[in-house]
Amino acid sequence: MRRFKLPPQILRLVLLTIAIVASYSIARAWLTPASFHEYGWYRGDAIRELASRTPQYAGRKACAECHDDEVHKLAKGEHKTIGCESCHSAGQAHADNPDIKLPKPSDKDCMGCHQLLAGRPKFLKQITLKDHYTGHRCVECHVPHQPSEVP
Image (cartoon, rainbow, N blue to C red; front, side, top):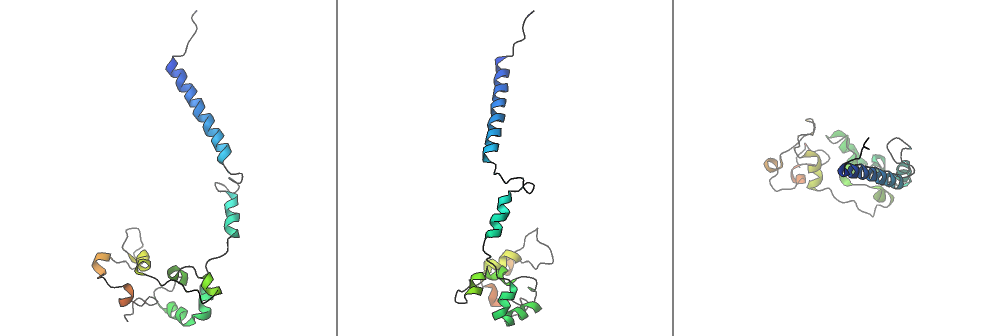
């Protein structure tokens, strides 16, 4: 009786598959952090690293300590649900030292929320940039803390 012999191309495919699976298994064991799967599909050390960072945002209460009139004005306008730091950037350094100035919001900051995009909710007032924007800055026609007002 003749002995069954694998064709050489099948033998090569089997060896190649074994080599790929073995190299994947070795790489996965070597590259996967020890804290992976500690919280499901997450690296447990990532949570500890994020918790150890110093806060960058001061919060609306810190802004209200010095800018109470602006916070009250904002509470009456359309932007009442938006935090100060959404437009004025992270302000912890400014809250700690008022001499450090925050960057002034630019038109790009306004467009980040108000440029017409299909995925945005309809309640958010959106503009088509080429139809609405005539080359002026947004703040020339709109008061940022109460955008319905015209200066």
